[in-house]
Amino acid sequence: MAKRVPNSLDLLSQFGERMLAELEELSSYGANAEGGVTRLLYTEPWLMAQRAIVNKMQQLGLEAGFDAVGNVFGKLPGSQPDAKPLLTGSHIDTVKTGGKYDGAYGVVASMMALGYLKAAYGAPKRTLEAVSFCEEEGSRFPLAYWGSGHVTGVRPLQLAAEIADSDGVTLLEAMREAGFDATTAGQQYPAKREFIGGYIEIHIEQGSILTYKKKQIGIVTAIVGQIRLTVQVTGSSNHAGTTPMKMRKDALAGAAEMVAITEQMALEAGEPLVATVGRLEVKRGTSNVVPGEVEFTLDIRHTDEPEMRTFCVRLLTKLEEIAMRRGLTIETVENLHAPPVAMQESMANEIEAACEAGGFLHMRLPSGAGHDAQLFGPICPSAMIFVPSVDGISHSPEEFTEADDLIAGFHTLVQVLYQYGYGGKADEIL
Image (spheres, one colour):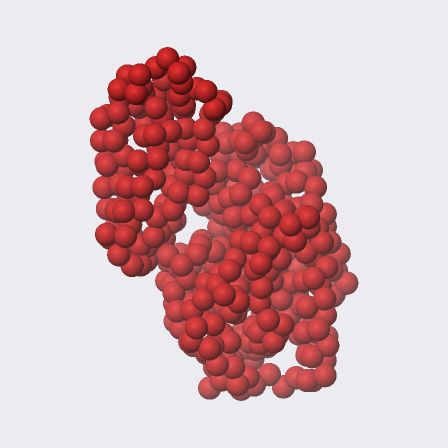
């Protein structure tokens, strides 16, 4: 069992309370009337929030600033420059009208943990860095992990000119408008980091397992893989009153059958596979016109890569059969293919030891949601800490985690970071 951090409980308690206050303050950037938060990549609320993070990190004594694509790093330099740094953090962006904990909790908890460690123990042996990734959700543009994807070298800059949001604004244009002209770096990966020892992410569960099991901390064993696609179904627009039913090429009717078969096939496949149509748009749709073009999204997830790929092929084959039978055409674009990623066992053991030292009830579980940690898993030791989500609600204004659970997660993160920065893990090669 890891030795408990020799801390000042009063100081730790103060930083925990400050963390809760900072999390609440951060939710004001992009707050909307529905009670949720909307911070889409490179928008004004997003930019204001990232700037606020930089200021808070600097106030905590961290060396803070932006990288070429808008990620924010707050560094606590170590005394051993040859030791690879440990990164900890999450993302600052949200879904539309999302909650105030998803991503933001990990950002705030990480920077406050480093602030506490600096105040209590000074400089660590190993450099520790808190990171606020610019994007993870894929809410504005049809791809996810733009922030961590650049740090890990997975997302090339050329994608920025190739994709656009619903208003036709390209990712490159939005990035430049926000003040990040990464093209001046002259690289495909202007924000890539070559020297990373490990990554730890703390996050709300976004599910109900911890609550159901009455646990305060979840230790993530693996993150499910994801395939995200955009499906365009094309038929013929025609008059709703003069076009006989049997002569129609109704794109919406075809898409509706495709949505239904997606659910049916996913149910037949069984857990842990899930498949979701999250958005459906009728292009130029009006009440008295047979729809000629429909676009919808597909999100497929599984803990097993071959199973996920096989299901995707089977489903797309079925969708093509439906389109052919109805005289429609179908085009699919894959926007994301993230394979399942296992978290590192030794890091999970450190989290477990921290839970035992802190007296927190804990369990191991997989993550059904995607996270930045799955991009780091293939390149460095990575781990995730979960705290409960009340009723399993996330991506919603009703998203909520009890303060005691937020504090428990914060204390656990502090303990783990202490071990890797100051304690018995500080001299290990990662």
